[in-house]
Structures are given as structure tokens and as C-alpha cells.
Length: 259
Image 1 (cartoon, rainbow, N blue to C red):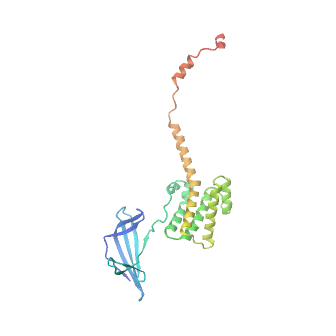
Image 2 (image 1 turned 90 degrees about the vertical axis):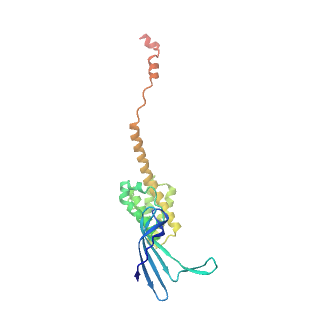
Image 3 (image 1 turned 135 degrees about the horizontal axis):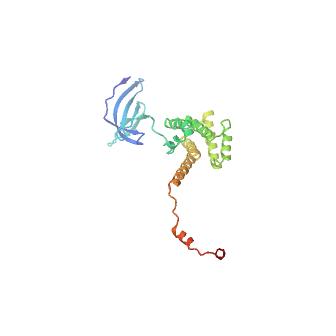
């Protein structure tokens, strides 16, 4: 059953853009109720606009008659409060995207092939889909390896050995990445669901791999190009007049006098 909800002027809600609880204007609302005879509940749908940054997003607040939190008021009387379950769309970010993500857009082959799977990875994290996030981590490793020129037909372990042989990857990083890839295999082929801490470690390994193999080399190349341009604009050092004077006053050698 659907019904209208009295419009409230302000609602406290989490704003993903501001990264915190903010006062928001309720610009639209709707309630969907249900009744199972012995159990009932409802979900309030709200369109909210943050008063801090004007971000617009959707919030749902659901209650069920069986979900009750018991407490006491100031006079010691027992009170019952229905437990609210709040959800948001778009989902609040579970992990801050790396600062270098915009730089990745400037690397042509990376922007064409890597940005999209990375965005899907962070989307899976935000939507609390750990298994899909684990699979996405594995896929991103494979894309980065191919961007670095490693043959796609090779196994993951052979790709890592090739990266080490080409000095694009250190031995310590090889061990961490090998572990992350095996975790991705487990999520893909064995239905493994990583715990939040494990998933956080997987993503950190991936982000470090991308930073070290794509971002840092691009930064060094860009710095080298700027240094070369700067060298062309720096005026040359003028000749030292004192040195010229001393050279002119230098006495002739005996052999030169004889001549």
C-alpha cells in the first residue's frame, strides 16, 4: 500500500559529497506500507537536497514491527522505539578514491581501458558487494599488466615474473600482488567472499601497483619534460669580463717571444 507522507522541511542525513551528516531539505517524499497480519512495517522514500552543497540524493527509512529497541525515559519508565534502517542512493562511498585517479585520465591507454573497471570496483565497494569487488580487483590487475605490455596469453604468475624481469616490479611487491591475485581467483572461481579488512588490503595492494607502475612513471616523465622546457627558457650565463681581462694581460711565454 502506498500513501503520501507529510512533507518535512528539514531532515538530518548523510551527504556523500560533504562526507558527513548534514541538514537537508526534503523536496519529495512517499511512504510504502505493508501488513502481514501479525507483522507490519513501512518504508519512507525521500528526495533530499543538502543545505551545505546542494547535492541531491535519495534516502529510504524502513521500520518493521518486530524490530524494537527497548530503553527507559528519564523517569525510569520503559519505552519502545522502532529501529530504523536507512539506505541511500547513490550509496555513500565506502572507500575514498585515490587522489591520482584524475591523473590516470591523462594517460591515454589507461583512461581507455582502466578507468571503467576501477569505477566498477569502487561501485561494488559502495554497494557492499565484496565478492564482485574481489573479482574486480583481479580484473584490474590483468588490465594493468596488459597496459604495461605483458602478453595477455601468459598466466598471472608468468605476468608477474615478466614484470620483475623487466624491473617494472620489485620482488616484495610481487609477493603482495601474487596474494591479491590468488584472492581474486578465489572470489571468481571458488565463491570466496572477502571480509571487509581483507578487501581493504586487496584494494590497497592494487592501488599501490597502479601508482608505482603507471602514475609515478608518468609523473617523472612529465617532470622531465617540464625541466627540459625550463632549460630552454633559462637565459645563459654571461661571460665573466674579469676573466677576459686577465687573459688579455697574460704575459707571453719565452717561446712566443723568440718567435
